[in-house]
Length: 125
Image 1: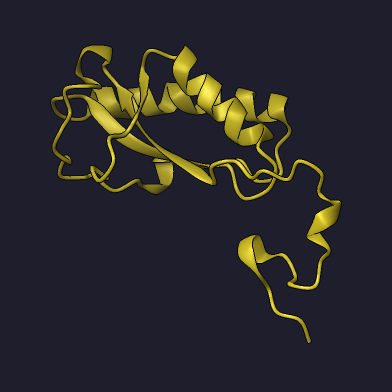
Image 2 (image 1 turned 60 degrees about the vertical axis):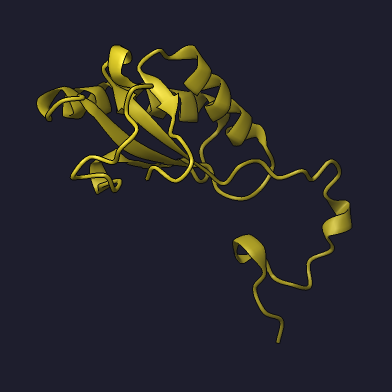
């Protein structure tokens, strides 16, 4: 009986058939909220972990579906940040999953295009 490898794929799958099989980043930890404070946040807030309301799993989404879901989530995340305490920034986790890099690249580009979203500094969350 074969086991399961990375991303839950069976170990016995011929991975050589995946042309250009470079995997993207499986998830992104970002900060969302007041633009002026995104890059000033150097210490985790009291609620520094990503809650269910700030977790977005894009497994199985197409590129267009993912972009729509990201835009919907951004509105909720910013609202959550603004209802919180100074610095009005909350962490969010965007899960792209293992696989090809289409969703990963889509999320990276989306982060760069939205002023209210910034990659979280390493080790902060």
